[in-house]
Length: 234
Length: 338
Image 1 (tube, rainbow over the protein chains, first blue to last red):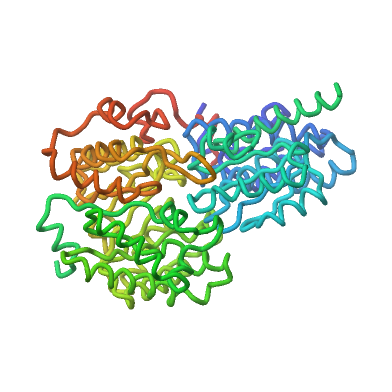
Image 2: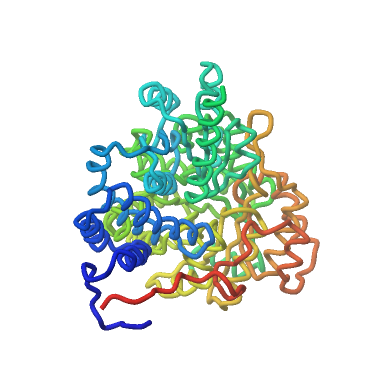
């Protein structure tokens, strides 16, 4: 097990060992090692989509689970997500060329006046890691920003987060405005933020409350699949 | 021991702090997303009423309406150049209400997080954080705050930066963190970890503790975690009045005044000396908390079972220290890099 003093040479590992090592490196947030691993797999002729799903998404799934279970916390997950992003940056142009399938599209933003967007950034990165296209509106969004983005981006999902007693009701303002405009049911609306809960999410008219970034990804996958099935059936 | 809060702590076994600011201001017409701190100038009467609500309910100490009055947060409202003005006004209104109370009431200048992540994980440098907190501290000091009150912090780095800023402002201070993620702060700090961090500061606070987080039960478990580590200074408990629900078009926290009275007594029995509420805690909650603290004798240190029986379930199974469970551990490395 322990080869503590041995330098691991990534290019000397076989494919399976390399992917396992990349999972470890993602877990430890080692950005340069992830970039190197992605490049080695590309040289070995792996399809970009396979690298994304097996090496990067596979590794981030483990990070997501340990985050959900209270083993990893925000600093570790941010480092892991940054490493994944570096790998994604290499794959993105190649994925576009090969026309790889997209799981779905999400517009996400933190509501007007809220305190920080750390959780929202995690969701954003984990969703990208899971193959979603994410349009991030950043912080401090009034209702107009959300509506404009829905119109121009035509996403499957709208994600909002709020962390303060003073900002939570604003998510309802956004959803109510969508209802008024008759567009509420065109989108899956997911909400999050540490103080919220499921009942709160339902009361303001969201499709689901997501406790953390890992749950957000699982919920998004389930609801998008259901929506596509309904559309296929209809 | 020249500051009023230390003197009051010397004279009394426990102090009652205040309750919610945001929830109360909503009830006065604050619109969601707007900056409550602007009301220090635009609606001073409402801020006086907020403070008076706590004082008349029996609070020995209340926090000023300045939680988000740092440059980083005010920038969201294009008011980043009004930091000094808004903080001074928050403290001046507090001074006015406290001095008219007819008894000693402490004006605690609230300082919330910047909202930015600090280096190395994030982009906010230590020097910039200190500068931001210092600017806010000077405003609160100029307005007559007795003590500065750091709250809802998640990162040890940010707590340290604020401590340094308060030393520059030459102000006594208290500081609480929010334990909202599986028994720890969002950035992963445990209750005993906070005790170690606080004791390692060159200018430690008068008192330290926990505020906000999730429900009252989780907060009490965190208090037990503090007092078990045998800290050298008083512990603060400021828990939410239950969890937020959306009822009839506004936010309602589901903790009743009776529940918060039980919470206050349990917090004292767990070893806290400054006890108050956070989100959802209204004057009627504070009144019942004061009555309970005065009427009920100090009891034995509560068990986790007694806490659950009195104020409800924990939101997470673990207290975050890993000492209370077998399973959850970091994934073992297959091998380490040289």
